[in-house]
Picture 1: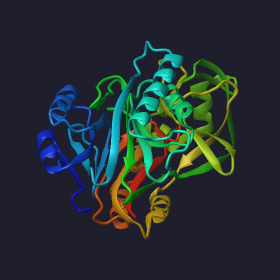
Picture 2: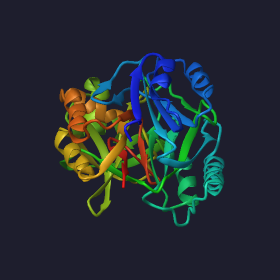
Picture 3: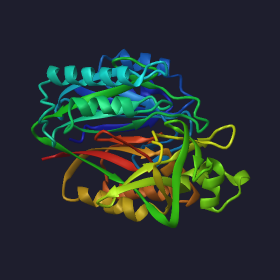
Picture 4: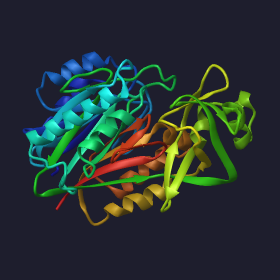
Amino acid sequence: MSEIKAYASHNIEEIIEAIKLKNTGLMIFFYGADNDYKQLDSKIASHNIPYVGCMDAGRLITGKYLLDEKSIVGLSLPTAIIANVVVDTVDMSAQRDYDAMCNDSHDKLVKAAESIGIDLAKPDMEREFAINLLYGLNSANAFLAGQSKAGLMLQTAGGSSGGKTDFKVTNVISSAGSGKLGAFALVKLSKDYKFLLDRISSFDTVENVILNVTKLADPRHILELNNKPATEAYCEAVGIREDELNPDTFANYTLGIEPGDEERLITSIMTKDEGSGLLTYNDVVPGAQFQLYKAKSQQQDRSRGLGKLKGRHIVSFLSFDCILCYLARNTLHEVQAIADVYEEALPGVPKIGFGTFSENICGANVNQTETFLAIYKV
């Protein structure tokens, strides 16, 4: 399926011209924060092809990462691969309460599944999946809970949008609407294709450190850890002064819970508040006991994770890679080295990805992990 194409440019019309196929089933776009998303959305929509896309702080294109704020990457999948697809959106604006968003997410997914013949109670776990691109300044939990309620066994992957690391700009575009939305593309692959979904993380545990959540302002705003101001307790655990705290610190020292079976649920810190509290990328519950993890080189883990694709005829690869992974590998001077890992493992395969402000996989909202979705020919 050599006609699948990935392309990068500062010009959206040039990208569409490069990736548009005779029979395009779905287009996916990731773009930097300096793009006018309404203009992008309008130009893409004029082609009348299903699409999803979002703003990010860095994007993967075959062979390299683009960390500027102007470029755009796009990938198209033909109808020969995608038997059916439905794109829809859920309003994720701040005024909506949890239950309303959850119910909306549930109902929209059920309706989408019915329209293309997917049984959410027993989906084909090798050919049916959803890609989620979510408005990144609000919690993704309600959206994901609605999907899980609709179809617990449906495999999903994606991430939350975000632009610059000031956390003030983020948006989502799709053929079903744009703005403060959660967009999903529910996909049924044709009989000749299957997909593989997995995730990869790279941490070492910081021994003898437990941070207990002793006070919250809201589920994503920690005021106290171990009965101390949250920033003070975190900096003590990391071993730095509070005036040394910066985004690289949060990328290199993250929090997590270990529920068992060597599973880690990561809850990374987004930024500090104006006082001594910490804002997180996903929800935290009172009394949570966090381990502290230190980021390590990602090259070995990424190579090992991509090894699961060996022997398969991969035709396209989508990466949902936490912005904190980007920051961590930047401090380790291995940005290009990681791009090279993908090119060595998947030579000639069209690849795109984006730096997410939290990833989601099969109903879970996670941080500082790469989740990937690879489509292969049977």
